Amino acid sequence: MKTVVNPLDNENGSAIVLALIILAVLTIIGISASTTSTVELKIVRNEKIHNQNFYYAEAGVYEGAQRIEQESNPEVQLIANTTGYDWLNDNAIDFSTPANWQNLGPASGNVNDNSDPAVVDPTASFAANAKGVRPGSSLDMGSTRLYEYSVFGLSQWNGGRSIIEIGYLRRF
Image 1 (cartoon, one colour):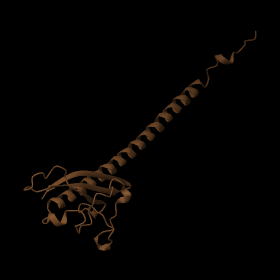
Image 2: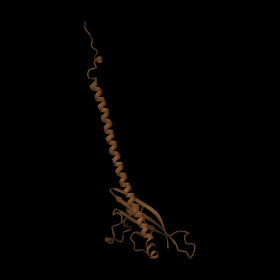
Image 3: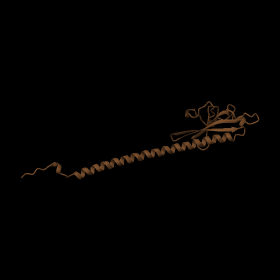
Image 4: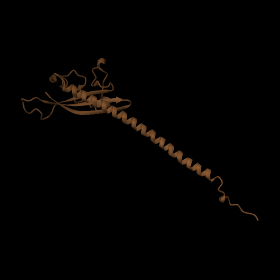
């Protein structure tokens, strides 16, 4: 008697097929984990650059505010259009746009400089806009006037950029 062999009943080689399927799944998991870790490393690097730029710009802002506060002759030096400081400007310049920053350094002798480099780091700069007398601040004729400034800090480091603006008031 002849026996009929059904090819579907033959399980020879099924372990190899199962092993290949498991190996393919593990390979996909490994590649996706590698891609995820690469993306995470880029995120961490970008966060470091952002934080460093933020802190340098913040240092520039505080340096500008400190220079305003420590000015010994504010009536002459801290009023727009009477100052000899490159970093103190009238309110016409929008420092929230990076293209408006011009800082070639004091050695360049460029009259178009409108900011100064910060002491903390050469990639950071600061500038200030004098807005004039704050409205309603000098109603009493015998009192001093309250002047308003916008102080800006800029940092451009390692392909990143941060600009910070604070308001500052000085009475003189």
